[in-house]
Length: 207
Image (cartoon, rainbow, N blue to C red; front, side, top):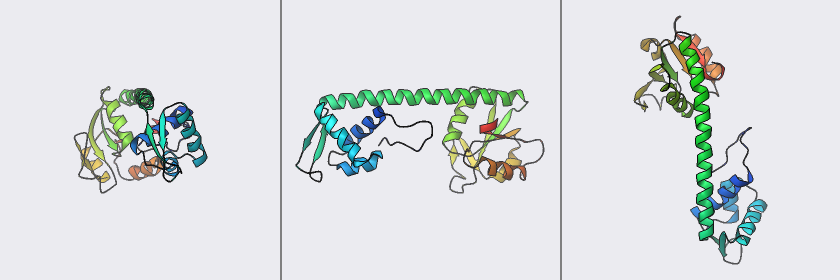
């Protein structure tokens, strides 16, 4: 299910809302308008307006007499629009990912110029995935991944076993990159008391 997420900079557009409603209809024809609203984070009145618009454009057909008994089905025209919209949405996400990866790569190159060669990533989550992908286009080498979430410790992240933060000292990298945005100041303070002199600590947001 394609759902909007809380963001200050990427607000859902009309096109995104249309895609979300069409996707919800395609996923489950017996969804009520209330169900669709809950899934797409839209008000019932807005969902109702989209349903009327889609019906008028012959993108969906509606069976049943009341909101509780109605089912919604995509027409061939509706399925075509859903496919095109999904492809356009996916292309924009890929472009955004590429742009972020490029910026991170530029930042990582600056680290290399400081004399840092080997790094450990702190945080085995989505941001770390982008950082790890960007590092492949640089001369930096990731020699470890640590995370303070016990459920992640012992698992593997891109071929590297996730270890406890205390193991940074044993791994002995030139630097540690904090890939978390939410708790970077807290993690930075923690690492300052943990690692020895000679291991640089880099916050991704301020590298």
